Length: 67
Ligand code: SF4
Image (cartoon, rainbow, N blue to C red):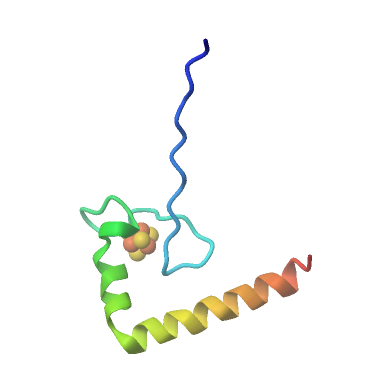
């Protein structure tokens, strides 16, 4: 029997659509304990701005990569 290797999925940065988490903040292990992500998600205006940014990014992707 061949041993199976576990592959950890790459965590995506919630603040940079389509980009992986690069651990750009100190002492984080990923988006789940990122203080910047927490700060943005807890602020109504920042969260709304992020939502608009994500929608714009998706629209650009759709234009650049039509299915
Ligand atoms: S550490 Fe936080 S802000 Fe930096 S890439 Fe990862 S999730 Fe995004």
